Image (cartoon, rainbow over all chains, first blue to last red; front, side, top):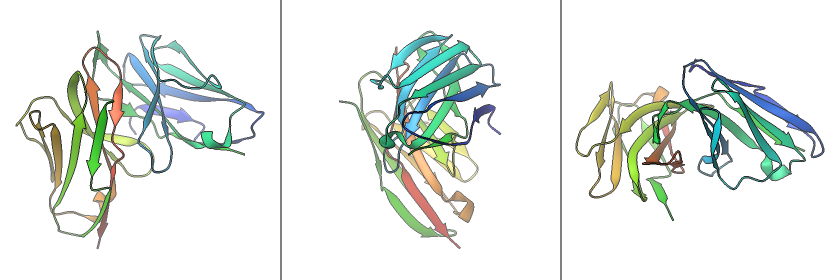
Length: 115
Length: 111
């Protein structure tokens, strides 16, 4: 158990559906991240939140919409996704001090399949 | 464009062998290099390296960073089947929250 939980662990959705992924960290960290991991590709950073402020949006399509209501919770809202969005979505958290980033701890991921 | 390149992409060894994994990088504003092990889902943190030449050890795993030649190695000695995993390296940046990952090295340890 890494202290970062994600729900659901598996999700199958149609292209017209709206769903949300949830991440919660119990480590007292102040920064949270969303990553996408596709087969045979490096982990791709999607969004970074530091103290609830979004500090990075790595050219992610608007059909992915993050929300960070507090430093312990992070959501990824999904809307009209495409089949190529099928992937493992990983949440992570870390301490951040100013602009300095420390090691990240990952959740178990949500395996998303878009049909 | 920033690059983080891991080699080899995959390897198969037998229990008891020693494995050396490489991670080279070409980035601006480098701060640190991280190693992770990913077995089924979540990558688990192994090491953070910030200074050159200082070896970090944890059991049978060790790692070192060379900031002049821009690479790091991860060694696993006396490998066990439980070491089978994808090993990821990533770099962090000064004054930026970005984290750039390599594609990973898949290690398979056969009994």
